[in-house]
Structure formats: structure tokens, C-alpha cells
Image (cartoon, rainbow, N blue to C red):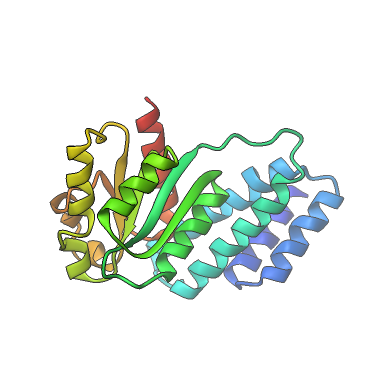
Length: 221
């Protein structure tokens, strides 16, 4: 039964059919599949499969990314409410668009993917000043700051990741908080993340979930 659920859920995700995806998992739970299996054996593997297909074929659109992440977030939230034991939050991340950048779609996709991986998200929005990122991370005890930039000048500017890194150094927070960046400029220049002082970068919104999850584990060590 589980293999059929996996196939049907993945088809719904590819078709961005939210109603079908919810119906598939709800029917599965009524049929005896545990909510835990829905999340760990259906939702997360489906996200990983999408990530693989995106990297190989490039056929998935940004809109599909957004809808699939939103569906995963909704399904996960519904299933968590049915867990026998509440899942442990893996960590916290502050995420926002760099100062001067108003492009929110990519960030919203990342948020959906992170929530599906049991990572708590503090969304500070668009056009975010460096000090706002750091203050939010300290206030919420977040291990990661994620900065999205869709324009070259916002990625490279002193009010972007460079500015956040400067504040972390000044406050002696570099060992406690890691920086992750993403967005179009980093896809065109794969070394840009190093130039702006980030600890890592993500090729797209879906891979960002795994990158951030790994960095949280690194901080915990």
C-alpha cells in the first residue's frame, strides 16, 4: 500500500494538485498508514526526488517549486498533529531577502521546504538590513541566517551577506551562527558565496533545505 501512496502523492506534487495530495495522504491514514510514515516515507522522499529531477532535467518551474513546497508544508503540519509523539524541532533559521531586494517567491519556497523538515523558521521578510538578521537570530537562538538575493548588487553589496558577516565578527557570533545564501546571482557565479562571506549556498529552494539541515548539525557539534 505504501508504494502506491508514494506514487500517487508524487504524481499530485508534480501536477501541483494540492487537493489530490491531501486526499491521498488522508485516505492512506484512514487505511492504516501512520502519520509518521506519511512524513518520513512519503513527503520527504518526494521532495528529494523532485530535487533530483530538477537538477537533471530543469523542467520544473518556479511556480511548481512554490506549490510543491506549500503542499509539503500543509501535509506535514496536518500529519504532525496526529503523531503519537511530537517531533523534535531540528533547529531554527532566520530567513529574509537582503537589503534592497523585494523578491519574495524564492524565500517562500525555502520556508515551505524547511518546515517540512521540522526546522523552525523566523521570516524577517524583504529588504532586510544586516543588523535585523543578526538581532533576530540572537533573539530566537537561531543557528542559521539565510539570505536570499535575486539581484547582483544586493548579493554583493555591503548591506547584504557582507554586512551580516561583519556584524557577526564584531559580536563574536561566528561560531554560533552560520550564513547561507541563495538566489540567481549565486547560480551564475558559483564562487560568489565565498566572496560575500557565506558559510554555504544553495542552488535552489529545495536543496536549501538539506544545506541548512546539514549546517544546523555542524553548529550543534
